[in-house]
Each structure stands twice: as structure tokens, then as C-alpha cells.
Amino acid sequence: MTLNVTQPPKNLDNVSSSLTGGDFITGAQLYYILLSISALTQVFSIGGVITNAINIAVFVKLGFNETSNISLLALALCDLLSTIMTIWGTLCVTPGFSDAELPFLPAEISPLTGSGLSNLVFRCAAWVTAFISFERCLCILIPLKVKKWVTPKTTTAVVVAICITTIGPYIGAHWRWKFVWKFLPGRNATVLGVAVVDTPFLILKEKIENIVLGLIQPIVAFVTVLVCTVFLVVYLRRSSQWRKSMASAGGKTAGEDNSRKEEKVVRLVTSIATIFILCYTPNTLMFLNMAIFPSFSVFGQHKNTFLTVYTLSIMANSVSASVNIFIYYKMGTRYRNALRLMFHLKDSVK
Image 1 (tube, rainbow, N blue to C red):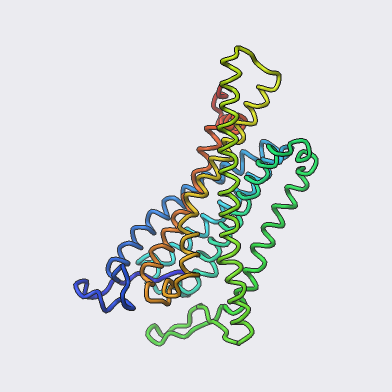
Image 2 (image 1 turned 180 degrees about the vertical axis):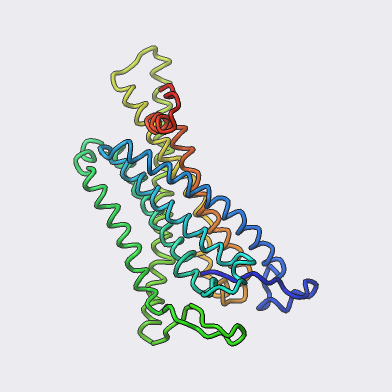
């Protein structure tokens, strides 16, 4: 879903004509809000492309003997693709580019080539984050069994399954959308655009799949990460209290070093999950409001408010996809040393 917001209302003093009625945000306000958010989104997305390219190089260098490297590599790949597509989708609604006499209609093709695909890939990232959080919870609850169950092969299989189950239904849901050539009398030119095929079967099929993909899938992923994060935070507090009690007793147990190592991993996963929760909240709220309030949609009474929240959610996705490198560098000793080695810097102190 992408909007062409290249033209503000002609009369900014009479904005009521730009509304479908009773919206919280006027047409004039919407224009400038979307321009500002789009500019920030581009900045975060470009940063995300750079940081995730670095992440991918580091995890490949670290190897795949540890399952966490595989999961984090998959997350970096999803974030990289998501930010690239966000850059393109945002460019399609940027004044100047969308108004140019191009051989295609940017606002029409953006959902299938930019913003829509960006949301899809970010949902893959959401499920990968849920898997990482859930795996870490299992490592705490049943550590011995998890080592047998969660191997590099099974982790790879889970990541591939996440991609298939997320991307596959999306392709089916957009069978109604077709690339077509359109003749524009005003330009006396034929350009590439998008048409929607309306048949009862395809309409029903798309509605069902949109409920699954647009509502159930993202909310289940969000709740999974939220629950696992709460569990990990509780574990960190208890572990910290245990270490303090041991320190006050003046002793050091044989398992204290392993406990510290486990704590570091849990803190890293918790930080990633917390950033995800904060940045994915606008998406979750948007999905819930769309399900509860029919007027909250691109075709409804509160379409301006919807488009503001939608654009904010895209920017939040870009932020989430851009900041993980700082968490890895701060909390991951092996990651930090590998990164510094890549740039020919002195290894950091462990």
C-alpha cells in the first residue's frame, strides 16, 4: 500500500474538502506529515542497508557452527532486503520522482515492488526474532535437550520454513494484482501500471489471506516476542540476584562463568527483542484498529489518520532494521572483534 502525496490541497485554508468526513488529520496536515516521515524513513533505510551489509559480512566470517549466528544472519538478510525495498517504496511517493514522466506509474507499482514487499520481509524478520527469543527461552528451561534439538541444520530448516510460510501466501494473496500497460491521454503515452482482477473467488480468497497475513500472523509473532522477552527479563533479574548473593557469601561456584556467558547472550537477545517490540507496536496497533474499526482504512472515514500511522509503521520498521549492529557491537565480544578485524583495527578487550 502506497500513497501518492505529491500534491497538497490547493486551498490550505479550506481543508475540509480533502477529508472523507470526521478525520483527525486534515488533508494539508497529511501532506506535510507524510513528506517529513518519508524523509526520515529514507535516512534510516539507507543506514539500514549499510549496517546490515556489515552484519552479514561479520556473521559469515564468524561461521555457522553456532545456531545463533545462523538466526542472526537470517535476521540481517531480512532487514537488508526490507530496507532496500523501503527506499524504493518511499522514493515512489517522493515529490519530483512520482510526478516525473516515467515509463511507469510509481504509486501503482510500489505496493508490488516496494512498500508491500518491505512489509512482507519485515514480517519474516518478526518471525525470525520470535524464533530467536523462543530458542533462548528453551535454552534456559531445558538446556540439555535444546542442544540436541536445535542444531545448525534444524535452525536453517526453521528459518527456511519461516520464509516459505510468510512469502508463499503473500504471492497467492496478490494474484488479483496484475502488471498492465496503460495509455495516458494527457501524456499521449503508454506506461506500466497495475490493474486489479475482480472475480468472486479471487476477492474471497484475498480477504481470507489478508486476515491471516495482515492480522493473525503479525500479531502472533508480536505476542510471542513479547512473552519471551518478559520471561528473559525475569530470568536476568533472578540470575543477577543469585550472583550478588554468591558474591556476598564470598564464594565462586564452578558454574558462575557459564552463568555469566549465558547472561550475556540473554541480554543480547532481550535487547534485540525489546527494540523489535518498540518498533513493531505501531504495526500491531494498526492491525488491531483495522479489525475493530472499519473506518480506519485507506478507503474509510479516517483514512488520513490511517495513512499517518501506516507511514509511521514503515519508518519504525526501518529503525528496527538499522540499529541491531550497535547491540551486537556493544554486547557481542566475538562480533566486536570480528568487525574490528575486518576494518583492520585492534581487537577489543574481552
